[in-house]
Image (cartoon, rainbow, N blue to C red; front, side, top):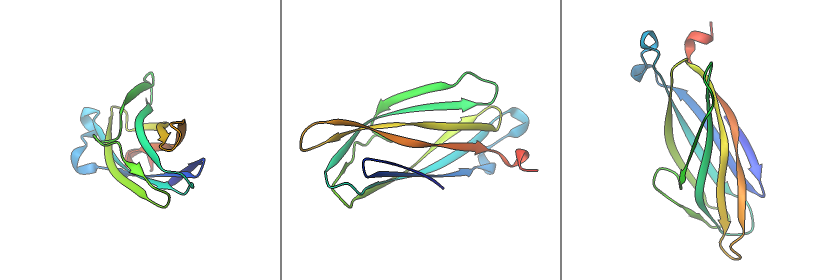
Amino acid sequence: MITAITEGIVVTVEVTYQAEFSSPHQHHFVFTYKVSIENKSPFTIQLLRRKWEISDAGDIPKIVEGDGVIGQQPILEPGDSHHYVSGCNLKSGLGKMKGFYYMEKVLDGKIIEVAIPEFHLISPIFNN
């Protein structure tokens, strides 16, 4: 697990390689990642957008942006948390992801850029 903290918003990511859905001989590597967002700040926030940079060894990094996460734009009161699982496919079996959530402080409408920590996507073929 890897963690980043921005203005009291704690983002933790845990990666799992999905061997049963991967086909290394066909250059298809599947990873899932579980994200936990904890609001340890004194203000209520809403997650509005996300921006990911996905690097696959040997390729130009891809930028993926969109509203919310998995179709949701959760509101987190102080002390609340939100968890979700998503996935990523790579061609090489070796990559990394990082990014930002754009969150709004509900009280004053201020937008804050919350860091998603960089994490590595490494298939078992690289762990030998």
